[in-house]
Length: 494
Image (tube, rainbow, N blue to C red; front, side, top):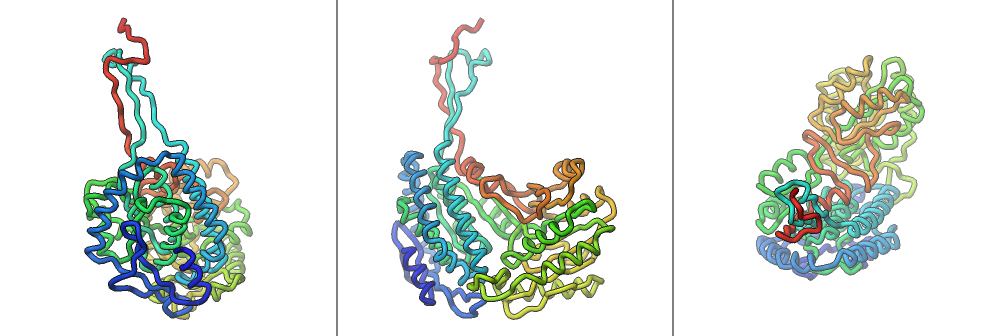
């Protein structure tokens, strides 16, 4: 099936995207069109889940969970390894689907597919390490004469709800880790990227993932709410906005959740920083994927003595970025996900200028494409400072005192990642200790991630950590075996 997706993309046809239900690809009922933000025409058409589909998937997932749990970890690991191999072999073709559906430059799309393969490899490796413990039960008098052991048991049915900005790699994390843990997974695709999502599912099936291990449905918020509330679903992994994450939690009730939500990430540039490097990195990571990343550089705080020099350097870097056709290898900034999102960011820039900010460059919109905007000196109450922009705009402010800028960074209701450019170890330790975030990136911007390193935030940025090892823990439970009157330890109580 994945061959059909990539063939349609290569031939410039509308990609017909089926659901995967009860072990079969299905096209029936109502469909929804996805208009590519750069091409401004329909690029994919996905079958929309009906109420009957939800009922069918609930039953199929509950039944499939037992069969998937029976697979040995070695078998699951081998499927994931093969999927990584297929992904690498089909890298450029899979990247084309991302570029068509999302307006993401083909270079960035290719990097995302590289990450998909790497993530699946990590999932395969972590599968081989799932185990348990022999507990020191005889260390207390009440446990003498007994033996106790644990292992990580699959929870059964996992629900994966993925966002549009990195639909392939985030699905690789969620579906790969869930399968590694021995679960079956119900996948709800983002409406903006149904073909990109279905292609990843198809690759895993091509690699030998049992049909019982996954169901794929397409739809909007109502579908997500129905799946979250389904009693068969034992654990939910969601990536998206804070508002939608709260709705997921309400619909889910008493279920384990892994929520990776929004951010308006801060990066601090100290007076001792390598300004040229800091400007180059902030420019490259502030507008990649048109700023549509929860850790994208949004707020930059620069020490006052070097602020004007930093702005000069960063403006020069920003103005070298190539904006254009996502399928052109030279393009570095493509379209945002849709025209409404680009118009929203454009309005936030205008609002910041009205309250005293300077627009140094960019901010020109053509449909869903916004040229990279550099906004200097917006006040703390400006929307572009307080809220998550999720677009091609970076705000630069100044600071005088390092303690004060830590407080300013922490004033956000989000806390995902932060960047810090300095050579002073005392400031590095202070930032690591005091910044209310999930990670601090030193001599890099907030927008840096390794897929095998824990990733997640605090406050309204969510909870749980997205990396295969941690997600496997979230997708499993500790199951204890107690052997009464049978001990591997000494049995004398005195």
